[in-house]
Length: 562
Image 1 (cartoon, rainbow, N blue to C red):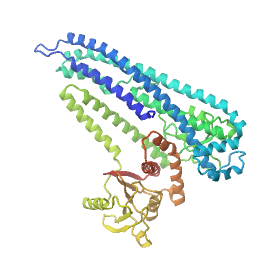
Image 2 (image 1 turned 90 degrees about the vertical axis):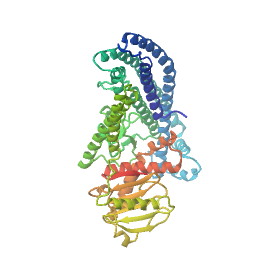
Image 3 (image 1 turned 180 degrees about the horizontal axis):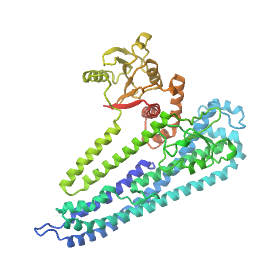
Image 4 (image 1 turned 60 degrees about the vertical axis):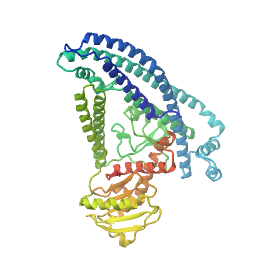
C-alpha cells in the first residue's frame, strides 16, 4: 500500500532528526580529554573536521536512495489522489441523480435504470449511466481532454518532486554547514567564558537545535524545515490532484459549476469565496458563458487554494444545491478569534518542540534540566489550548460532580440507553431506561429539563446525534452529556439558541451539508487504512460533523477523556 501524506511527512522528519542526532553524537564522541590545562581545541577541531567528512559521505550514501524512494511514493500518492477525486465525484453525481437532478438533455428513461442496477456499486452505476447518456461518440470526444489532464498531472508530479529534490540537497548542505560552524564556534564560546566543554558545545549547537534544519526559504523570507516543507508540498499537490480527478468527472457529465463549502473556520484568504458558486474553468473545463458566476481561475489568482489550504468545493447542482455566502457579524468575529487562537497554538507547539530538541541533545546536565523545565512549561500551555473547553459545570460542587462521575460509570457499556437528569445544582431528579438507540421522555419529564444537565450513554460509542441537539434546543437543557467509548462527550448551549438551527428541519439540513462537505475527507481516511471498521468510521464521521457544527454556531463542545 502506498504511503500516506502523514507517513511521508514523518519519514522526512525522521531524516532531519537523525541528521541532528548524528552531529551531536560526533560532538560527544570526539571530545578531548580534559586536563588541568583545559581542552586542546585545535586537536579537537582537527578530529571533528575528519568526522565531518565521514558524516558527509555517509549522509549522501544513506539518504540518497531514501530520498528517491520517498519521491516515488509522493508521485504514487498524487496519482492516487486524482483517482479518489474521480471516484468520489462519480458517487456525488449518482446521488444527485437519485435526488432528482437532471443533466442537460438527460433522457427521462435513465431514472428508471437505477432500479435495475441494485447489484452494482456506485462506480459501475455511474459508468453505465454515462455510456447510455452521452454515447460512445461523445465519450470519445472528451479523450483529448483527459490526455491533456494526464499531462497536467505528470507535470504536477514532476514539479513537486523536482522541488523536493532541491530541498533534499539543501538539507544535506545545511547539515554540513551547521556542523562546520559548530566546530569552530565551540572554541569561541569556550574562550568567552562558557565554562565546561559541554556548555561550549551546547552554545555552538543551540542555533540548529532551536530552529531545526530550516533549509527552505520562501519568497517572503520565511525559512522552513524539510519536514515542514514536505508536508506543505505533498498536501498541496495531493489536493490539486484530487480536485483534478473531481473536475474530470464533472467534465465527463457536462457540469462545471461548483460551490465553495461553508465551514466554521475558513482560511482568511479563502473567506471571500466561501459559500459562493463558481464556474470551474481550472479542472472541469468550464467557461464564462456557463453561468452568472465568477471563474475559479480568478478566485485562485486572488488567494483561493493557497498552500496548506483547508477549504474545499463540491459540485453545484442547480435546483438541488443551495448557496449561502452571507456571514453574520458574530460569525466573522468568531472566525477571527479562531484563526488567532490557531496561530497562537501553532506558536506554542513550535516552542514546545524547540525546547524538546534542546533538552534531548544538550550535553550539559544543567542546560538539559533547564530546557526540560521549559519544554514542560510550553507543553502545559499547549494542553490548555487543547482542553480549553473543559471547565466545571457552573453552580455544581465537587461532590455533585463526583456523584455524576459515578452515575456515568454505572451506565457506561449498557446495551440500552439510560438517561439521568440533574437540576442546576447537580441534584439528581430523574433516571430513565430507554431502548437500544433512544429514550422517549414524557411531557411531564420534559418539563423538568429547562436549566438542567442531562447525561446519557450511547451504546454505539458515538457523539451527539441530530436528535440530541434538537432535544437540547427544545427543552432548554444547558448541558448535554453522552457517555461514549473513549470518554464523555459534553455540549453546552450558547447564550442564545442560533437562528440558523432553530427548527429540526434547519438543523437536519445543516447537519447533512456538513456531512457532505466531509465526505471526501472521510473517504481518504478509509483508503489510507487509518479507519478499518464500519463502527470506527461512523464514530469518527459523527465526531467531525459535531466539531464543525458546534464551532459554527458557538456551542462549547469537548470530550472528557477516561
